[in-house]
Length: 214
Image (tube, rainbow, N blue to C red; front, side, top):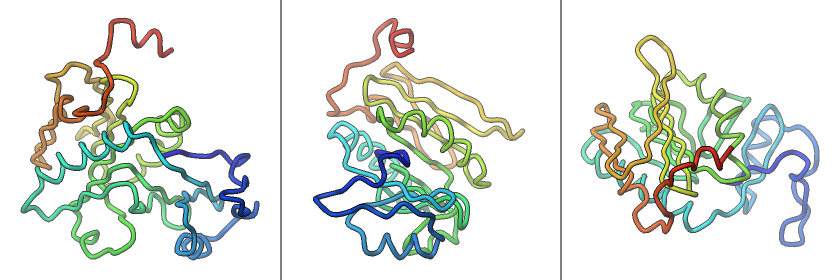
């Protein structure tokens, strides 16, 4: 997804004025979403526009969603991609993760938004990377159900896997080799980097990539 900071929110789209610069209640935000051609995220009364993504971004998201969906066939879990809203903090923060997986019975009854994700995946974009790593992840950590958070690069083969331990500590694993895999037993999921980057058209990581990125 593309996250526009407040200073860019109120630009025009297709010649029409964007949302006026004021704070909204959650109810007003929900009403605006039902009427808007664009999706928006909501944080503490501010509404942020989202825009289209690259083909690489969408291909990665589809590959991850398909792997999750195949692993969870026959299980009471939902795999949702991009257009489904996540209630991070009721009346305060609502997002549209690239992929979200929930196995909570309450979420099985929902029609518009999820509340209890077990896995969230964000495909990194230049305009969203700092947000996905910082504020957004800090907010996601408040979700009691969340156990796994994946950040997937679209520049090279790199998946950063954050896992919540039984002691309540978030660990970090960087996956960069073709045979590396995200293995989540509670989701019956084994997902290799080859699967994630199939037909994406980006090269595996080269030596020195971390230094260049910095």
